[in-house]
Image (cartoon, rainbow, N blue to C red; front, top):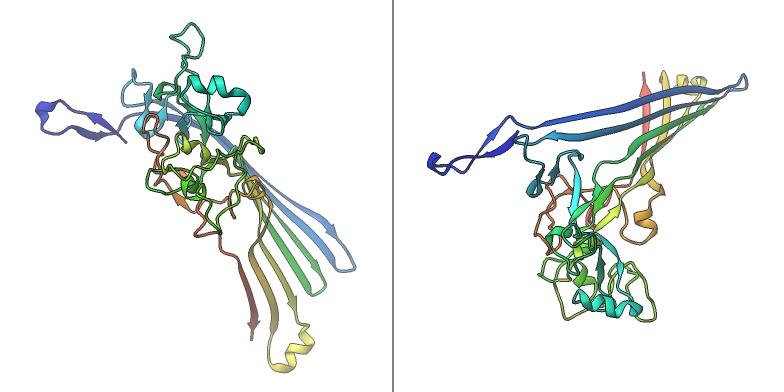
Length: 324
C-alpha cells in the first residue's frame, strides 16, 4: 500500500492505494544429524538451519517513478536500504588543502563526493543532497542457527547458537540532532561515556572526528551511526540431570529432572562490540533517528536501531521437572 497524490480540487492531498510491485526469492535449508550414538551412553546430535532472502522493488506508485526518497524506496533495490552520504574517513593533516575546498579542516568527517555526472566525470567540489547514495541494508545477507545436543547416561546438555550476518544497524547515540544529543555528547570529554577512537594530530584515525565541545550539531554525524550489526551468539545453554528412577521411586515420584538454563550467555562474534561501539549489536528499537543535515531524509521507521539503555537480557534459571 502506497500514498498517491491527488489533485488539489479533490480537497485532500494524498490517498493510500494498492500500488507498487516487489519480488523476492530465498533459500531455507535445515539439516539434522546423529553424530555419535555410543553403546556406553554418550550421544551427540546436531540441527542446523540456514536462510537467505533477496528482495527488490520492481515498481512504485507509477511506472515512471524510480525513487521515493522520503520513504527510502528505490526501484531495483531492497525495501530496507539506507540512503545517505557516505563517510570515507576523516580529513587528515596532509589533506588540509583538499579539505579546505569543501570548507572542512583536518579532524572532520570526510564524505565521498559522487556528484560528478554534470562535471565531466569529476567531483564538483561540494557535498550536497546529490551526493547521497545507498550505503547499507537493514536485512542480513544470511541468518542461521545450530543446536547441539549431548547426553551421557543421565546427564543432558544442549547449546543453541544463532547468527545474523551482513546487516547494518543504526546507533543513534553516535549521531547528532543539534540538541546536544549523540556524538557531541561524547565529544565533550564527559566521564563514563563510551570509549571512542577519535582523531587528534597524534592519533590520525579514520574512525571518529576530533572532539569539539563548541558544537552540538556535528556535520555528517549520521554517517557515524551506520555500523556492521553482524553477530554470532550463543542463544541458550541447557544442562540437566535425570535422577535415577530407583532413587525417586522411593519418594513416590515417577521421574525427576533438575536443570539449569542460561539465555543469551555470550557473543562468539560481533564486530560492533569488538570495536567498542556498544554492548550488544542485536537491535532493540526501530526508527526515531534522522540522517545527516544533507537532504534531511529521515531514517525509515523500519530501521533497526541499537541503543545502550536496553541490552539483550541475560537470564539464568534453575528448575525441576517432576511427574508422579
